[in-house]
Structures are given as structure tokens and as C-alpha cells.
Image (cartoon, rainbow, N blue to C red):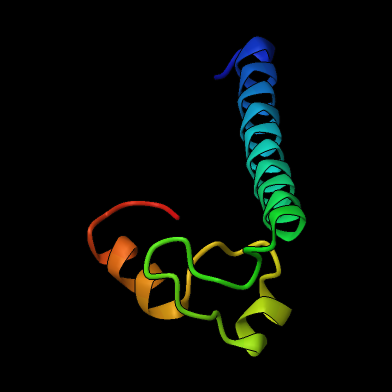
Length: 79
């Protein structure tokens, strides 16, 4: 048998995870807005090549081209 407090704790942990994800997304959007402001939006932060328009349409906040994103993921990092 589980205690009611155990379920409350699980719900709280899930809420924290959702809030962390939302905070990260907001930070990514704000970073993209800053890149627009300084004129670097659409350029990969890693290799400085142009990010494909289709990728920007799908992920407008992305800071990396697909090739650099794959490299980062293979290295176990996040963009």
C-alpha cells in the first residue's frame, strides 16, 4: 500500500520537471530573439554556416545547423 503523500510527491516532481522544460524553452526563445536583434539569427553558433530554412521553420529557436546538432548529440551534449 502506498501513502497519499507518496502520490503528492510524485505529482510535485512531475510539475518541477515540466517547469524546468518550460524554462529551458523560454531561454532558447529569448536567445533566438537576441540573435535576431544582433543580426546572427539563422547562422549556426558552432560552425557559422547558414541554418536551413526548413529547420528554422520547424525549430525557430534552434542555435545549430543539423550537422552540428548531430555532432553535439553524438558527444552526449545538448544544444
